[in-house]
Image 1: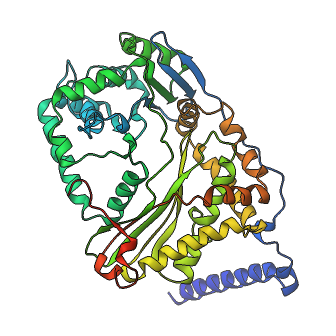
Image 2: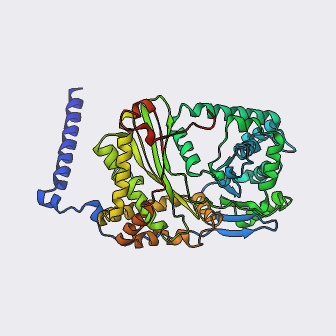
Length: 480
């Protein structure tokens, strides 16, 4: 026993000596450490990033297919864009579009009950969802490749023959009522909704479901909305995964060929770009305020889109190093969250700064936000800020294409948004070409716009102690 202990002790000692020699051999002298290059100064050959090109096919009834094969996993992914959106809600029946999408998935089909549809999806280990957004409806579907035949049969029935079962519609309406009720307890979400209502004033994009509008929506409203917009000539499908181009076309023809085209889609006009500028307050007795200050700006089809993308990143969407975060949060400690966002649509864009802060610092945070955005119009942006923004955006760009599903989706979306065919392939190059002068000129050109909508959601009593109440326009959410 004693011999065994000694032997084990020698083994451990030998190992420790070996590790000491290894670490000693790898230890760096001060001179060697000082010669190391910082990660952001490492020189390397430019990385090539060539986007795979999906196959584009148009079926006889107008369906557009984007197909990208990838046989690594036995899965097939299908994503669809339908030319519609919540902005097409019938006036006075806001919520009809969203309910149509929801009950398409939950309310059965002309030949299968909702229970049977769910049972078959579970049996196939498939998933499907239908969602409605401002300017599109989106369908997501995935299934194992050996179940693609039956899976596409079910999907086609949901898309082309929804039954909108009354009990499922009633449930969806109740859930939407509850969502609106709970919104009062989510100040940030409520502030964003009311900011959208103000910035899109007198535009269908600024209408939202209310308790009153939901009570007016009937079964026939969903049927009518579906018939108006869910047509093959309004539909695009991105197909990726373990399926060949020939099989994709075969199955889509098999299950969607009877889907007949309807009246050509009449697209809504873009917003006028004019707002009732002012500082609006929604009174809510809470210890924190939500502040959003925004205006209209350029869209993706405008030559200044790339400069404005960089400008937004530097001002607030670039995280902790960005200006608004640094000034409002890091330096002054006035907000637990601050920054900016840039919603770029094909023909217009919306830019806004925001801060979520305690009530007594609301107007100071707003003042800092305004002054920092204004400071950008005085040629204060530096070359180092521009280089940082370029590297961040360009390096992050490729992560939008990490899977075949993302690749085919992004390229289909380019056509849906009517962007140039080379938009993705030239994006990094055009970001890289933006000069400091381009950036400063864009700041002067667009941020000097004083037609701003400012929304404050917070406690009026405490705000009154730091600013005259006459500076604020008091409003009430539509559903209160």
